[in-house]
Image 1: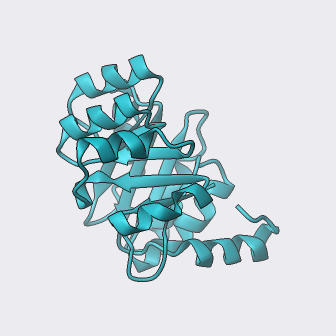
Image 2: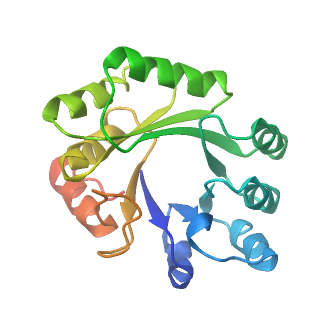
Image 3: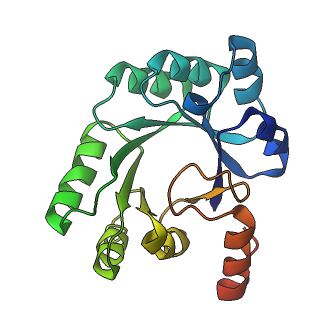
Length: 200
């Protein structure tokens, strides 16, 4: 499944046509009414708001399907999400490189110790070996999302959902990427059509 990452208010109008979207609340100025209306829509939405637990709480109570929090963030948010039936993605980002396998496995373990439903590991890819190491984490019974950041990480973004990652992230269109190396929804759909003949 492809999750479209949205960071612009004007793009919220396309939500009804999407299966899953990430709302980058930290990139747009939403008032309480807009948050309530947005997350009560009949669309699966991930609420992401780095460093602002109050905004995430509003999204949780409005009906967000998922929240995405960084490893080590406020544990009360996780408790609140659990009470509302909102799934918790605990993320770790490394913007410089991809750690060794042992360290990656330790980070994944810490995500689940923090009560994650899904662990998300996003690392800057500097080599083919980095891609292989990141994808190797999907050899697990637990739900793990892996994201290869940077131009060399595109293959990870494509392959991951085909071998166990619950979903991958895409931009709505060119120029609206929320992370380095993110491809557009149309680009990813075309690739999947060629690879496996699927439309999602």
